[in-house]
Length: 454
Image 1: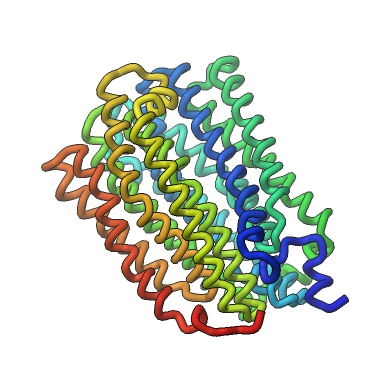
Image 2: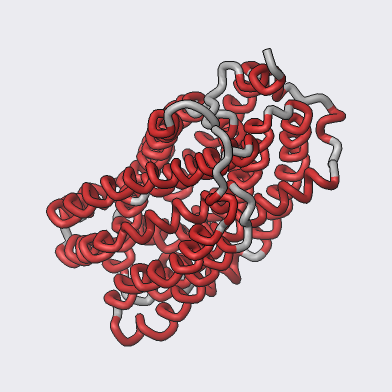
């Protein structure tokens, strides 16, 4: 057995075989994993809204994008770290693979600890900047502080899941997420209804579920694969490896942060439009996460697919995989558009538990308009993840910075004039602008034009 095959035994090798089957084998477990992750996020929203009322739901919604910003940075770092792992796997380099995982542990956990402490120290200025109203402030601060305090567990799970997916194991992360989702919902009900912990109870349930998921993921990874059984010497920082990880991880982290920071900028404007608008937008964003979930799934699939094939030197195969993923995305866009046009109000009501007319109509309006241009978002996710996989860590960040700048402009200039319509149109317009540099980079990249032997 060759060195490469010895490493890839019992793992999903995306460098050979039918491309469509390979992408689906990778993407389907990731899809269901993300679905369950969103499911318990929706469960949080519904339970908080039903048990504690719309004021508590507004407190959670007013800070949810800030939570996503902080957690998204560390999650982006974890996902970026997985790209060098995929390249080592594709190349069949066992020594480099183990060294890379060891450096992920050393650097990633240290950075997460520092980031958590720094965020909590500046939480009051951050909440003040977000225009959190006085009546929502106490609940909002309790919720976000607990969530941010649990970032260590969030990073730990995402790092393990990213490493496992990089070598083709997508089923194990799915299993841990399913278990975590069930526990999250049960603890939500216990902490809120049984222990009367209010909004804080929902946050505690989420963090504890993440801790369980993270611990199980690392135990499984060490137990299942000999290559990941690290020794103390494997944790020793290696300059070149750390540099490669920082390049890939930093690019993904900043890309995620720019996206989320732009959403925070919009949320600061939304928080001035009243409680009903906040509730409607919170629900609409939850549904949007479901609608856009497949784009993220196919994007992460292409990052691993491109990373493995980059390591194996099969550059033409990357372009073929991108074509297949694009067709899948178009099919998804059509299905989502039909759903949004006919079921939006029902979906908003299902998420919030509200029958307030303004909440239902406002949330439905957001969904009906924005889904018309989801195909642009699909291209953004596919292109920037493919570029990350083949080593272009600059263009995706530039594109994400365009998104940040565009959302800030809309929040500052258009929302005061057009109200919620300014929010509705902000993202589609920004998507069109930010896809341009990604498209140019994909078309011009010389690696994707090479006729490498398969």
